[in-house]
Length: 316
Image (tube, rainbow, N blue to C red; front, side, top):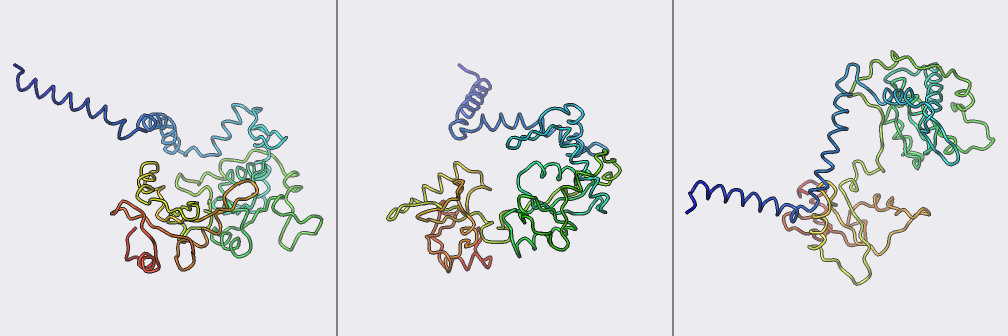
């Protein structure tokens, strides 16, 4: 006869074993997540060590450390061009010395309108060596949108990449200067740490702009689904599918059923018009749905429901 205490122990062990065995069934990604969390500890430990140091270790400090360790190692590969850590350090010193001589100091903001090219890297690092904040403007912005982003960052200077500012042989407009020749002639002497010594851990390094959805409907999370004419997806199944595959923050609050999505020449989906139209049934002719967690499905979005959402009566 098994004693009560021993029986309770067996039951407990059996229950734990069953629970452990059932975890992969209900949580099939647990091994990947645990593996990621284990690997995550190293970077987080280094991050805490860097930020708690006095003075804190910055991105610039880490870059300069790598320059000392491996100056001749390739750092930037662009088309048929190769730049080593030392090359980028020299160019970033030129940028920093030029703008320091031009009056920029720690805490100022500079806006950059530059494509992905080597000059972007050393200009960014050069400004960071001065403790200057960088506003990274989207290169597709024009007119009022561009002006708004520039003013919002309170930038003192706007740097335009040569591939963005294609003016040919025309003279520069009033207030614009060509920097390439001036920066190339500037000293490449290392930048004293004292020029950025007032930068703290919580200070801004750069401003990164979103695709233009901040403060607009599209920011709430909308996904477009291509459906064939006459076909209507099962919204219960879609809700279950998205809930099982995506974390909560990534699940779209709104779904738009459309018959086609246009693409760019590089085969990227063009989402600008979708973002602009948002999920207003008075504007969008496609079928619209919103996520109803109480019903575990996506329900149709009509004008009346949209009004209650817009005024905050309906909670999403």
